Structure formats: structure tokens, C-alpha cells
Length: 496
Ligand code: NAP
Ligand code: MG
Image (cartoon, protein in one colour):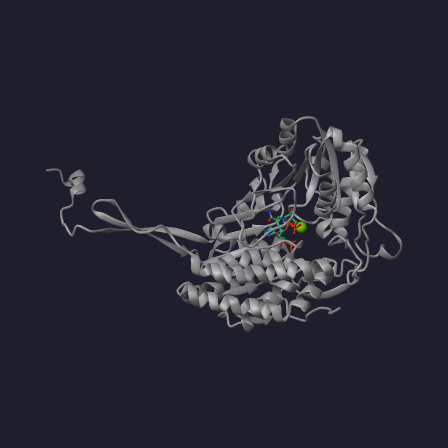
């Protein structure tokens, strides 16, 4: 497996360079705890240089034709294709993903998203021109905003960087991205590929460093016109305050319910729940976290999930047999363990897992697949985001109760309903307050369709042409078509 791609920590104005900060960021292999890369962080001057480079390039980039942008973005996708295997290796190394996940999901999904926006760049449009007053023709211009300051989390580093950058630049904006400090490597490779593809210098910039210093300076920078953030709800709330007066796009935390009605295909629901709870070691904002199962099928469901969790293999990331990798950091491992300990103390019962594995896995940040029952709906383990391989199962009696429980957290990012009954499926789709409701599945995403939250999960959309609503402003152009000097409406000022 490849190690550190050996890129300097910043990419500004099309040129890789080292940060000027005195602090160093550290990338560790989550499977072993070994440091694989450590470089100086960006300092305030680097942040300013990156914003200046983006600001300068905006003048030309915003005036390119959609066809010109499209051609360059397709070249970018092709450049990424040539380094797909290396991207997967580095994603595995920095984020602790089994190679099957990074090479089968993260990397191809990211490249597809670049290609999607290459095509979508040519489909930006406003309303057609028309006479909404007899004396004027009105038309709509859809314009880019300027420099976008983007901040991304560590759970899907490459994918999140792509989701943030692509709709912005396809619409004619320029971007300064700050990836999470612990997972910057594939974002730097992404920027490097942009330069090789011929994307003009300064359109895509990457700066690395901690949220509290580098991220906060980016958010506050006066030439950053919009802040686009994906991460936790508490940090998003802080950023919204710091970015007051700027345009904002917030993709925040989730606590997705997984509702199993009594007529569901239980085998499908059990497979679906384990896969959707454990994908990316549960570090997925849409992961299945709370399964509500109709009481007559509850015991069968719990037994099925427990048995399936027993087959999940934790292990080395390069091994093809490995199903579940470690959590991203020691901190995240302690965070997950703390949640499970408090749930136990609260009276919940841990049916499977609930422990940090020893032996060969002890040096990494592993955590066992965990199944919890008998938790109270109001308890922390049901209400708050754990972001680990932990599924809580609770029973319900009737459909109305299931929907009420599904909606009973502050979050609203994603949900699923499992049933063979079309009326139940449609009711769940309508009544659950979430940005995505799956029917008889949970997790799949697709570049053509939007992703984004309700409630404390944020607002605005990633992916799909809906994301252009975030990254463009709509301008009304109103032209007089009478040629008359003393217009009818002037009577309100000039009198008779
Ligand atoms: P996080 O702690 O909120 O951090 C996200 C990013 O914000 C990181 O780059 C972080 O930098 C930076 N940051 C922290 N404080 C900041 C500040 N004061 N000013 C500016 N930037 C700041 O989230 P995380 O732990 O990385 O990721 C997990 C969270 O992301 C979960 O809540 C998950 O649900 C959410 N998420 C949501 C979506 C979605 O689409 N809704 C997708 C993926 C993940 P450093 O970490 O480098 O300090
Ligand atoms: Mg964090």
C-alpha cells in the first residue's frame, strides 16, 4: 500500500507549497496509530494568499462559458481516473477505510460526481424572459457568488471535498477548501489533479490546519462571500455566528431512523440495518442509528441483527476479507466508547459488542459492532449522534407511533421505511421530516439527486443541480420596452 503522497500541505494558486504555521498537523494510520504525515499548518498569511488567489481568478473564471468549464471539469475527472488506485490507497491510509470501501465507493463516487458537474455546468438556467408588466421585459440572470470558503469533515474526505468544490466551480465560483486536519491528503491530490487538468490557477485552493485557527480565519475573511460547511451541528452553529452577513450552506449531523413495519421482508431489513449501521464504521451522517421495529417482529429482528453482526470481520485495511475498519482517531474511539458506557449506566442492554477489541487490533482505533436494546427514547444514545458502529433497536406498536418516534430527535438528514405496503411507504415518505427517505433500502446516494438536511441537520443541498441554488445568486434584469420619457408610473412623483 502507498504511504504519504508526499505533497506539501497547501495548494494555493495552482502551486503546492508548505504552510508557514508553527503548529504541525498530523495524519495517522487509524489501523495502527502510526504517524504517516506531518507538516506545518497554514498560518493567517497563507489563508489570505489562498483567498486572494481565489479572488483574482474569479474575474476570469466567472466569465468562462459553460462549455469551457465543462471541458476542463471532464479533464479533471479523467485525471482523477488515472490516479484512482492511489487515491483509494491514501483514503484508506488516512481515514481507516477497508480498501473495498475506498476503491468501491469513495473514489468512484467522487469521480462520478466530478463528471456529473462537468455535464451540469452546461445546464444552468433561469426563467425565460417575459413581459410581467406591459411596459417591461424581465429576465433572470443566474450568477456565481465569488470566493467560497469550504470546510469539510474527515469521514469521507475525498467525497466531501468534491461535494463542496464541484457545484461551486461548475457555476463559476472559485473555492478555498479546508479539509479536516487529520485527513487532508486526498483533498491535496484532488487539487493537484485540477492543476494537471488545466483548471486555471486559483480556481481550486486547499489550505490545511485546525478548525479553530485555519478554519476560523477562512470563515472570517472579508473576501469570502459564502461559507459552505459540512460537519457537526455544534461547530456549524458556531460557524453560522462567525459568518454572520455571509451566504451559508450547512450540512450537519444526523441520527437516521430505520422503521420496520410488521409486513416487511425481515431478511432484507436485517441485512439493510447491519450494512447501514456499520458502513464506514458508522461514521456516516446518514447511517442507520435507531431501528424502530413493530412489536410482533421485534425479537426476530434483534436476533437476526445480532447473528449478522457476529459474522462481521474487523481487521487489516488492505485485507480483502476485512468488513469493518477502525474509527478515524483515538479521540473518536473514546467518544464512541463513552456513549456506550453511559447508555449501559442508563439501563440500556448491550446485546453485541460494546468494547474495544484487544490483541492484534489494540493499537488501532477499532470498536466492535454494537447492538443496544432497552434504551429509553429520551436517552442520549437515542437522541444524539454517536458516529460509530452502534445500532439501537426499539419497539413500536402502531404506525402513528413509529412516525412520531422517527421524528423525535433534533436531526432530520435521512430515514428509511421497510414495508411491502405502498400506502405505508408513501405515508412514511410524506410524514418523516428528513432530506431523504429510502423505501426498503438505506444509504445509497446518486450524483443526480440532492442530499441535505431538515431541522438541526442544516440547510441547502449537496449534489444534483439543486446545489446550484446554493452557489448562485439570481438577478432580475428589467428593461423598459416603451421608449417613453414620461412614464405612466411617474405620476406617483410628478402629479398631473
Ligand atoms: P466537526 O468537528 O464539526 O468538523 C468539521 C470541520 O470543521 C473540520 O474541518 C474542522 O476542522 C472544522 N472546524 C472545527 N471548528 C471550526 C471553527 N470554529 N471554525 C471553522 N472550522 C472549524 O465534524 P467532524 O468531526 O470532522 O465530522 C463529523 C461530523 O460531520 C458529524 O456530525 C457528521 O454528521 C457530519 N457530517 C455531515 C454530513 C452531511 O452531509 N450532513 C456529511 C458528513 C459528515 P478540524 O477537524 O481540522 O479541527
Ligand atoms: Mg471534530
